[in-house]
Amino acid sequence: MLRHLWLPLLCVLWILLLIAAGGVDIALADRIYAWEGQHWALRQAFSTEILVHKAGRNLSLLAWFTVLALCLYSLSRDAWRDRRRPLAYLLVSTVVATALVAWIKHWSNMDCPWDLVRYGGDRPFIGLFGLRPVGLQRGACFPAGHASGGYAWVALYYFFLAIRPGWRWLGLVTGLSAGLLFGISQQLRGAHFVSHDIWTLGICWATASLVSMAFWHAQAVEPELANEARATRA
Image 1 (cartoon, rainbow, N blue to C red):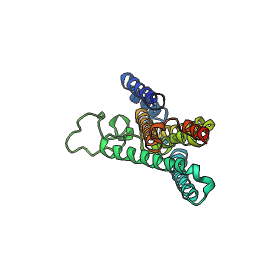
Image 2: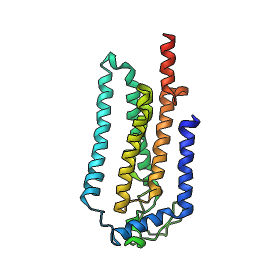
Image 3: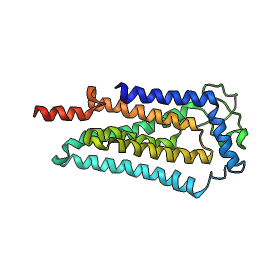
Image 4: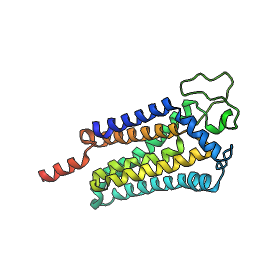
């Protein structure tokens, strides 16, 4: 449990502390904003808005519905009996992760970089725990919602750990790569600071790990060991 849940989350926390202490959010956003000519030139670009944001979101949804279809298919095939729980896990973990990020985003009340006066907007920067002035419109940009559509798939690590352990790192890299692509694209559009994406990664990994515990109980973090134990008893 320590190796799979708490150590990665401690790493995420350490990165967030470094970002906060070094002012990395503002410094990086300043550089991106200057590089784009003192405006968010890529906010409505085909590569970022259409290809990565909209098409990427649809691809993530398609992947989820594919898992749903496979989960339903497994119920009617005895040969797929051992895959039912892992598929159900993947289905639940990804939807819970994205829903949790969306719920936090609804209540966090933080602005996007493109909303801020510093970057051509009309709002002052107010931190996560800062008090917003009365009458200031609510913000809805923390954590990174779009990145959750990629980072939620870090659950592939536990999915493959259960059915094909040798592929678990490929599953993890797939989720991390999708989240990075979605997150960087949104930063280029001015939709998020880098810390928003790191928070989303932490939430998605914690969700994947805790849902794994719910599906595999005490053996959640090492389901392949449970499979080996059953094979030995047989």
